[in-house]
View 1 (tube, rainbow, N blue to C red):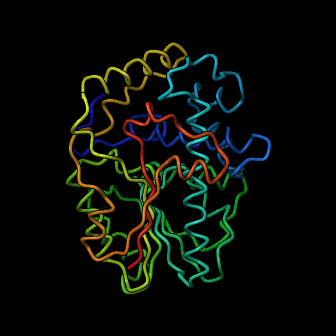
View 2: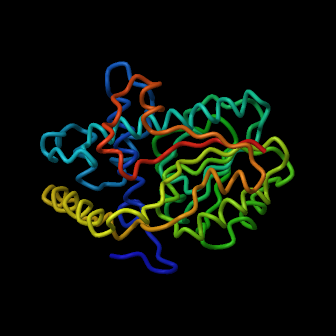
Length: 304
């Protein structure tokens, strides 16, 4: 089903299902020899959601060979990409904590378990923002698993299209304090103007010394939009044969969008960015061939 204004989801449908897909990739990456990440909660969270396709991925019942060799959606490469992305944001929070920041915000938190698995400095408060159903499911599942946060975790059950700033402040957020913000796997699911407004609201609510880390998606205005959607459709058809029927082309917003790093710089942040290949190479993971890099994300950090 295509996106509509005010649409909602749980972790088995629409945009929510992509959070479960990413958690499955983190589980696969964590299970490898000498993994670059260790997320012990990813697999049990995926199993709790109950989407058969992702459960079978986590349990090894569906393999890379079963899903075809499309280089854009190869499941092993996807797991590598999610491992690198996870490590990037883990290290961001580690560095922010070392710099004395004690307030963190995870936008569209999904099945992110950082409040439970990272070693946070004493006194840190982690705010998780997501839709009410998503927040409720994860909180209850983690409690059922006997998991305890490693710092103070405060949930903010609100849609980012609504007045999330007021909800965040009502949860005890201090807009004058230095804050570490992350937007992981979010921008592609926002219309371009919503991405711009999100970065502006972050800026308005960031005290001196604040930091931002984000996965930035490129503008696709110069690409053949129909070709991009056809590739997504081919992946949908392949995965549907294994019981998972989700049309990715209906979830994301293609077309022209402002470069996130440029926009943050214009808003007064000192911004740096690295490509997906730079991140993969630094972590010793296979990089992406140049002819397959269309639409690849970059990873940015910004300091105020």
